[in-house]
Image (cartoon, rainbow, N blue to C red):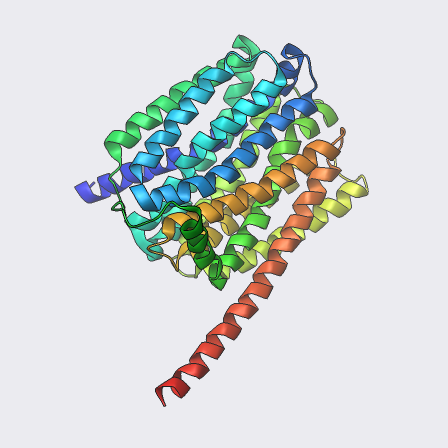
Length: 411
């Protein structure tokens, strides 16, 4: 392996670990919901609010770190976020009641989302628009390992050592990622002292990004498509461990099995990109996702599906996400260079904000049934396809208008 390839491999690996920090923090404690509820004298549904608060924290943090990345470069905000994450994770070890856990998980998320936003911006910095979709797919290989490893490992850790040990493991992971980032990543963006952190200029900068039709179309389409994944994560503990009565270890293995579809097809996506454009793949992936969602919903309402059918349909749904997510992300960020940090932040905020709403809805309405989870999967998929088709039409209209105006201006 040449030095350049070895360097790229190391950087992609660390960027993947940064991207995986949030999902690891989400997935590892899922098998322990009932144990946490028993220990903190509450219910599993209330414990699930600590998952929703984490999603809300990530959504809010995206908007915080975007401007900081454009003002101070990539590494200083990253280090600050990781330190917040480490301190908050250590604090989770000592909580005595569920409200404290919900609040601390919000703070933990604020820290962890610095890793995700920085990783997205660094991909754009280091690899450019042409290679970014391929690199995003490679990141998903590392990212995809988290739902395979985290809940499975979490199930065994909680069974043997108790739920608090999960946060000890996350604390160690956070420290290791901080060290790897310090020594393994370059500063990929020169700090811009002229970039104002006052509210008005920041808002103007975000509005500049939001005026880009390509960004709006693919960011919102990708976010609604991705919302089904949040519904699945929030609903799966109840669906599998309460409705289908599997124990926490088996649940971890089911979660890992389902992640194979997400990982495998995100890597197959990298091969398809050699022949097809990201825009083409997104459209087909969302159409397939809608089909799977409708079949899943109709069959679930009709009472046709048991454990096996539910696993198969969730597997197919996650395969579609493996195609749609990296391509939608790459196309939405492609128009930006100077505002890449702010665009990455908005993209992440949309994904996490819409995902948080989906997870909260699942937590409120799921009562020993998969229907709320499946309904959100189907509806969010349909919304994503509608947004994509409508947005593409508006982009084409703008392109035609611009092309027709150019000769007139020259004349």
